[in-house]
Amino acid sequence: MDDRSSKTELRQKSAIGSNPGRNRAHNRRVVLEVIRTEGQLGRTEIARRAHLTAQAVANIVEELLADGLLIELGRLRSGRGQPPIQFAVNPDGPLTAGVEVAADHMVTVLLDLAGGIRGQSIIQLEETGPDSIPARVAQEVSRLEARLKSDRRKLLGIGVVMPGPFEVTGMSSVGPATLPGWTGVDAAALFTRATGSPVVVENDATAAAVGERLHGAGRHLGSFCYLYFGVGLGLGVIQDGRPLRGAFGNAGEIGHVGLVPRQGRAHSGPAGALERFVSVFALRERLAMAGTYVATIEDIQRLHDEGEPTLRDWIAMAADYLAPAVAMLENIFDPETVIFGGGLPDSVLEAVIAALDPLPVSVATRDKRSVPRVIRGQTGQLTAALGAAALPLLDTVSPHLSVADPMG
Image (cartoon, rainbow, N blue to C red):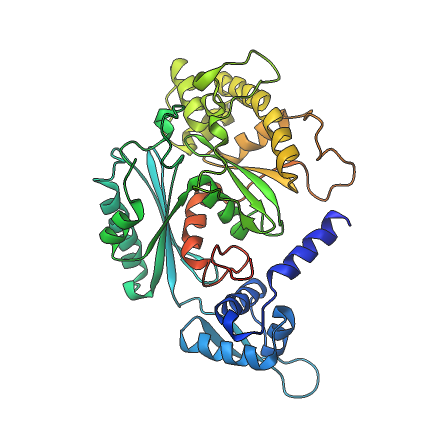
């Protein structure tokens, strides 16, 4: 079976409902996902794609209309006979908020059920502890709601993502990439009290992979690895359409792994951690040692446009570390591709990807590929926040991403 056939089979599997009544919640998610993916559909077509009976679909559609999750668009004119009534996800229905709390900034987005961005902001942070961040999250979500003139009752929930690892004793790697003061804190409870809304907390790289799966280069991929350039370096893994979280939410902490680069020498212990060399923090540190200070992604873009030599040298070094990392991920997870994305300009990510050549031989080394071994993400700085906003939707809209999926 080639790559294309495998992906088609995966998409078909992810949108299959179950007719027994005990799986009604799952069937609601399947119907919503089918309609959201296709844009608009009639009941008969929904039933065919979701593998549900016509009566089950009719009942679910009526419920979703009553709940404000769907809207009726009218009849589609096609062929003979009575044209079918079309249904679509309600763009003016419920919203979700997604927040990425990083070591030096916070990204916030508001999404509608169709995945449309209804509001967004990026602000700089000086304090990142539990005494200040929950209030800042509440303030920013409220500000975006007010700009949209949205009623808080329309908010399904808030997803908050933060850099890991979570609840790990004795791990010291890139301190500036993590958030001090959160050990032993019930973050979800703090955010829920501050915002008055249900809050889900997730690892930033895992959420970024979900964001790329729903909104970016991973939309047509079932299995991929996502290397997330936050302040540190994280890994999100999507396997058969689902995010791999691990037993304690720490799957993908690749930044704490030590690897031997293609050029130069290896470092042992925490000093050899990958994100000490390959991360936004590592790049800023190297530039600062050369007398150049950058605060934003636009600053890095400007340096790249100018051909700044320290940045050029860092790109070559990053590729020396990342080439064996890519081969390692391919050999462990056998993904369709590895995606680079996050807090670096597109042009810098593309330069790093170009410098990977030649990649080491791995299980991904084959002539017939429908996707290159490494590609650039498409959602930029918003990736993790988009994934965060998807978290409250997973049990409502996306059966193939839901951790509560009774069919999983």
